[in-house]
Length: 499
Ligand SMILES: NC(=O)C[C@H](N)C(=O)O
Image 1 (cartoon, rainbow, N blue to C red):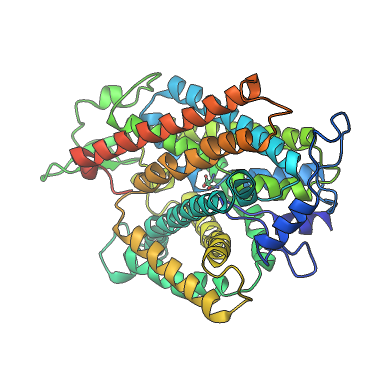
Image 2: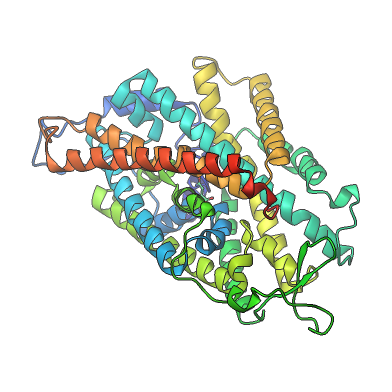
C-alpha cells in the first residue's frame, strides 16, 4: 500500500524516516547494516560511465511520485512556519521574499548535491554520506548535528505547547485573562504533557501509526494558513493600543475606541514596510534556514520512490520546495499584514491580542497543539537511534537504554523550553548552527569528497560551486551566530514579547 508505506517512511521536521515496521525495510537496526548494503552495492561511475544504472539496486521503492512530494513537503513543513511573519516584520515584505526565494533555491541545490553524492555510492542515509566522505568522524559529525537539530526541533514544538496550551485552557474555562493558576502556566503544562503523552508514545519500539501524524500536521498547517488569510480581512488595523499606568502596551481589538488613548506612532504602525533592517533582522536567515530543513529525510524518501532516478527525485524536491515556498510566503505576508510590527515570534500566539476566546483561533490552536504534541515523539526516535549508534554501536536492543535515553532527552528538552524565553531564540540558535550545517556545509563538503576526482576534478565547475556553497553556509553560520549573540548581549531583545 503506497500511502501507508510512504506515510510510515515519512516523518516531519527533522526526524528520520527509517522507523518502518519489522516487515518493511528494516533500517531500525542501525546504520551498519545499511552501510554494508551501501558498500556492497557501490557502483562507481568510473567503471561504467555511460550507463544509467538504477540508484539502489537492492531495494525497489514503491512510493508514487505524488506521495513522495507529499512526504517531502511534510518533512520541510514544521514549527518554522510560525516564525516567518515575525521574520518579515524585521526585513520588510520585499527583502523577506527575496531571502525566502534565495533560501528555497539554495535548499533545492543542496538536495541536488545530496542526490548526486548518494547516486555515486548508492547510499540511503545522511550519516552514511558522512561516513563515506570522512570515515567514522564524518558519521559522528553528521549524527551529532542531526541530533542537535532534532533536539532544537523538539524544543520548538514543546515551546508551542508552552505558549498555546494555556490559552486553550483559558478559553475552555471562559477566562478573558490568565489568572495565574498553575494549570494556566505553560511550564507546568509542558511537564504534564511530556509525562502523560510524549513519554508513553516515545516508549514504542517502532513509530507505527505515529508516522501518520506528519500528514495530519501538514493538514493542520494548511488550516492554519487559511485561518491566517481569513483573519487578515477580519482584524482591523490599527491595532487599538492603550497605554496602561505602568506604560505596558496592551493591544485591544474590536472594542470601542472611546476609552483608550492611541499611541502616536499608530499611524505608521499599520504601514507595511518593503525594506527594513534592525537588530532582529539577524534572526531572519536562521528562521528561514530552519524552516527549509528537510535534508536528513531526502535520502530515505529517495530510497522509497518508485522508479527512483536522480532526475525524478530532484523533480520531487523542486515541487515540494516550491509548494512550501508558496505556503511560507503566504503565511508570512498575511500574518505580517494582520499585525505589522506587532507580530510575535510565534505568529499563532499573536492572535491573543485579538480575542483570547475567538472560536476559529481556538480550533487552530487545538489542531496545531495536537499536531506538534504528536510530532515530539516522532522527532525523538531518530535522536535516540543516533545516540544508540554512537554510544552502544554493537549492542542489541535493550529496554533500559531505550527508556533512559527517552527520559534524558525529555528532561533536557523540558528544561530548555522552560528556561528559553522566546521561540525566536530556538529558531535563532538552531537556524544559525545546525540548519546551515545540514543544508550548506555538509552537502557541499560531502559532494567534494564523494564524487570521484576522475569524474569531476577538484577544479571542475560543479566542485568549485559546491565549495562556494559550503563556504556560504559557513559565512551564514558565523554571521548569524555573532549577530544573535550581540543581540542577546545588548539585552534589548529580553524586553520584547515573551513568545
Ligand atoms: N525539519 C526541520 O528540522 C524543521 C522544519 N523545517 C520546520 O520548519 O519546523
